[in-house]
Amino acid sequence: QVQVAESGGGLVQAGGSLRLSCTASGSSFSVDHTDWYRQPPGKQREWVAGMPGSGVTSVTGRFTVSRDKAKNAVNLEIDSLKPEDTGVYYCNMRGLLNIRGTLIPFDLWGPGTQVTVSS
Image (tube, rainbow, N blue to C red; front, side, top):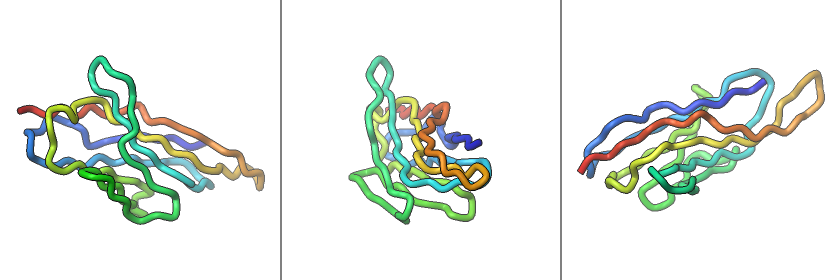
């Protein structure tokens, strides 16, 4: 099985930066694509940034997605934080799990990590 979990959230001041990590754990799997989403208070979940499995770094405005191969993680760095960046940040990973030679696709979400930006 594969499990996905986010880490790195917390309370930060506006103007600062923050790095979140999405880590996949398990055995015999590959990740084809990773996306980061967020859900502001009282609003729907929205896409933030993403990167294919073969990528190293992807930049979308103030959001940089990067891969840490050693930790089997995909990081999201947010620069110039604003109060409207407050919300729960989720990671979604899609890939293939190898079970005794059979490739099974997976599409997993982490439980989320809270980011609060104070003004």
